[in-house]
Length: 171
Picture 1 (tube, rainbow, N blue to C red):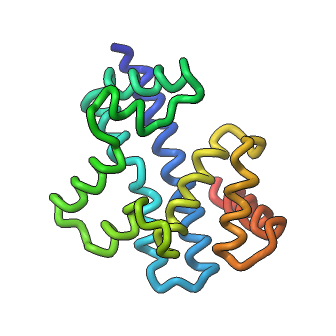
Picture 2 (cartoon, rainbow, N blue to C red; picture 1 turned 90 degrees about the vertical axis):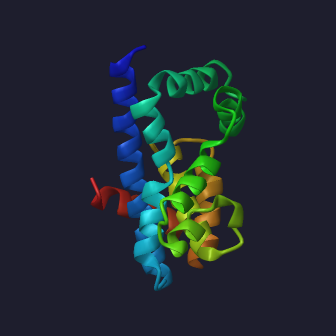
């Protein structure tokens, strides 16, 4: 087991979580959401199950990451099911419930309810943070920006400028 690799992965994940929380908060404030703080928390905590894996079962988490690097077409959920027999999103939701976290946080964190604007706000922030980890040239970013523009009721070029401004302010 390579603990330095797990530590590096955890640090990257923490950085991504911070960026996701910042995007979510900015989007929620722009929308005038009264649940902005909880949306921020939901986006920040989105990958906490993966963080737990890196701390308590790093070999398994690195196995998932290795499988995905080896096969770029492999979906994250399938890789997680293959190694863990559960998807980390489902694990996160179950832990939130068992730990009796606030119901609003549990609900906004549930990616299966993207028809709710607060859930969508958190999820789009998480996606944007993931897709922009290296740079702003990822092929998925135009789709993210299109969805964010719709959420914010703005033109895509305005949504892109807004997201980049948020990212720069939070460095």
